[in-house]
Length: 266
Image 1 (cartoon, rainbow, N blue to C red):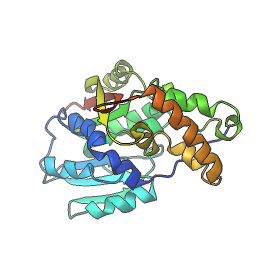
Image 2: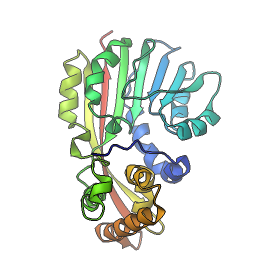
Image 3: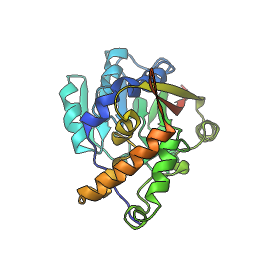
């Protein structure tokens, strides 16, 4: 089985920044007050840093660090650095909080980390009393965009080259399962799910969307063979056109997301 660490393209990712940013805003809206005005905040999987800046706007006296394991994303993120906002390398799969945090937030990152719930006890333990762990993950692994990608990757002639590259439905838990895990660690938990109906514009907009996220492992695995990469993308594009037909108003991409806000007792 092949395992692929995807390479990231910040410019491609940011092409749908407005739609991608809304869940983060909705997540932060449910975060309660933090224990200290000069709070210590970590953004695990900060990507290009554009959303991390919202943390400094919400808590202007806080010190915020954005962590990511992509050199490309960190290079983009560091353009947002300030005296209260910095960025550093960290792999969420192995990250241990270096200090107590008042808020640990993670946006659309943990689905890339197999077994991420096993890290929850250490992360909660690292929160200051009254601190919060807030995250959102996609809950759309049964959507056509993912199912068609996996089916195509499992077909000939792609099976041998792409075996094990893509994530499956067990990449994330249900909201109820996350609630149970974090309540079991003594937290007060607010868990919910939302399905957004993103109205996308342009030519093959769903393909353009997944090129920035879900398709990255395939693009990385086939990067050394541009002809094969383009052939896969063309075949997948045709499948997406049928699954997500264009309308007079644009192309609708339903996108389910899972949200969790867990607060440690004071």
